[in-house]
Image (cartoon, rainbow, N blue to C red; front, side):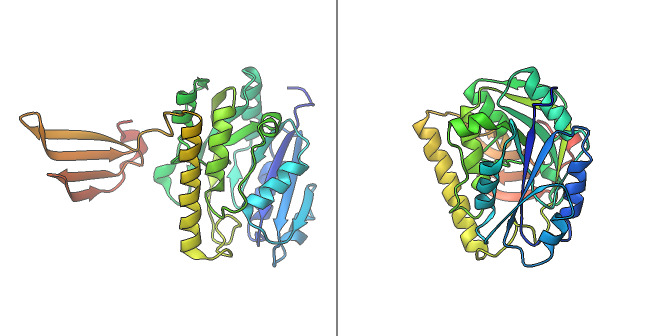
Length: 295
């Protein structure tokens, strides 16, 4: 890797004083050092800004506009060849950027994808164990699983291709704006490589910018999610995308004469199991450990 391979790390913050120092320490302790750390503070009312000023980062302050606007501001300021979005309350393992950059350069890809640990909902944890290269649109979409897991923080992006296709965050979306962003990036990317050993730790703590309720509660959140899903469906229609994600469950049937379903068992990707009798839901079992899942 040459020194020219600068990675810009964009971190939106809002009242992040309890955890921003740990986030920044995990970035500054990376084995790969050629990093541009851009923190966009979105109108914090606590001492977040004072803490950030103790670190060698580029600080941008703006009035409260939401995480999407903060990320767009960070993108405009970025000067690196590659780009990573990080939430202020999260962590990454210490060779995260070295692994992602080594792999993205090895195949000249526009995107590299890490695994992640979902601390609050462990059943959503996804650990990557093998290197794969995805080029075909259906395969990229199935791997990225955008419709169900559109998180941006698991990707390293080549910044030039995001700018070439004018991929930005929809600032009207207070939630799920990363899903609308990611479907465009996945579609227009030349290749996506999966990277074992690079792990993002998603914490989703109360009080972070992404989880803040400043924009008005569950109703607005649900409206944003619905709008993001509609954007994805419309984008898929316009670009003839046949696959929007991986299957959410595998179904097993017990039928009468091979025709009429009597008992149906669904095993979801999260590990949850549901049973249906003659089409009526009768039982749900807890999530099964990842090591025992069927797919």
